[in-house]
Image (cartoon, rainbow, N blue to C red):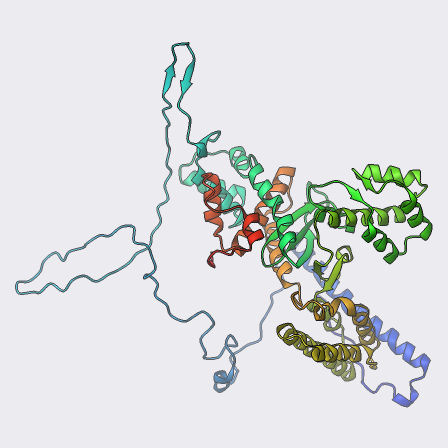
Length: 546
């Protein structure tokens, strides 16, 4: 039996205001916390019960939607688009379906028998789109000559088939189906066999994972290219099991590019190493010492490091040996110094200290100039369980006020003024300082105030977005692949999944069809510039819906 998430009903006037002593207020707070905890536990229990039913292959609990049969049909004309009214849905406007099509073949069909006295009235056009799917097996006869000196010369193969027994179009198709259409290898092989393509499971796997170094290099160039031209990046991560062990995939991107990298950790050191890219060095700079001060590294440690002659280290092992030689052996302080040295290395490689990193409040991303997502900030209030009318009204008021500030920030981004900046700041402070009879809401508002600098960074930087929806939307690609194909088993398989997810998303953002991109690369024509070049020049090709 699935437990329903229903908060314990309490009367809003259970304790009159005049009788709210400090002890009573504390007890009410405990009740609110227990009610919230019970609701969260019920949600978790329901999720576990659903998982058990799935593992036992039992039928899932049906999700019944409310009936719409009794809705007042007369009110539909007043509903907005998409709400079930009579208005047309977005994108339903009529357009010519065939005027823009390239005609590859034209056939004239004549009337078989025409009565005498009839007049010819020209032709009626009727356009049909079709596709041709057939295997093409080519045997190359390479001419050979024996030179006077006895040496044999042989005509070279076309560059796009050298080292391959499968042509460039087939290779592009396999990559497109697997990485763009999310077709699994067994299904893809079955399809190819039905089309009389003689290919084994091992050959298909090699087509998907081997000889992809040029793609890996193009993906590796995306991150430094975007960092060079962007004023902000958006980040997120998700689980990515590998070889039966826990792992994580980190996303870095914005409107220009998407970049995925899977590792075994989601620590801040891991994130900083990803930002550092292919380099492996560590540097202690002024920004490194500022970071140590921020995270309260003991003064004697900072002084020892500053007084030492060495500030550049070629590897993590080199840095750790230096710390041990200075008798800095505490693991916590060593980790903070490593993070600080990574920051120094990243900034030395060209990362601007003014670049804003936007995240959902995950601690590992809180470095450099950090901004928080307003959507995630609001969830801390939205997720509260209300047990009384007073609590419901208080939470409703707080959410309405929060979204009013959000809308004011959107307007400010369009026309930033000092007056609007002051008004928004004061309104935010007033919201966070409000004391209600719902202690959990008060705590949520206090957390908002603690994050004030990161939530209101947009007042100083109107160019950054207010939310992190882009990163969530992009990383959903990875989550979907994980649900379909499960975890990765080989290092090359994991690397290829990261690479082609990055290239696909970036190509689409640059207005390049992923199929056109793959065909261009497998034929080695390179008429489409490298994606990092497009990002650096911020050249967007005509938009595509592919």
